[in-house]
Amino acid sequence: MIASQHDVTLHLAHLEDGVLGYYEPTEARVYFTFGLTPVEERAVIAHELGHVVHGHECGNDRNEREADTWAAQLLIDATAYAEAERHSHSVHDLADALEVTEDLVVHYRTHCMQRLGRRTYGRQARGRFTNAIARGLSG
Image (cartoon, rainbow, N blue to C red; front, side, top):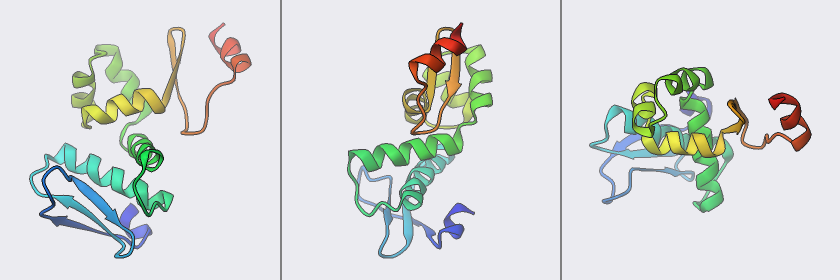
């Protein structure tokens, strides 16, 4: 649905070794490779759609991070993450429970949530708590 909203098509293709997927803006196509598990396929497509949504035309560290953050926020529900974390803090266990890749869980932890004491808060890519807000919430 997201691809269609952005007039982009998804294509399963034989890609070079090590390339799981890529967005080709001149063709309005997202390519992903054969042999991915369903979980990997979702993560790769979500990442590439992150490039589409952000209008990226080339890959660099910032664009890759933005695409990863967009994919993590799309595929990981904060409430489901919190529930899964009540049972285990293991990246492997969380990825399994949330049906995402371990890399996506690590990225979500690093870029999409913020811990304040014993509490964890989701945040948007640009939203960080100020010290005053953090003190008020953790008190």
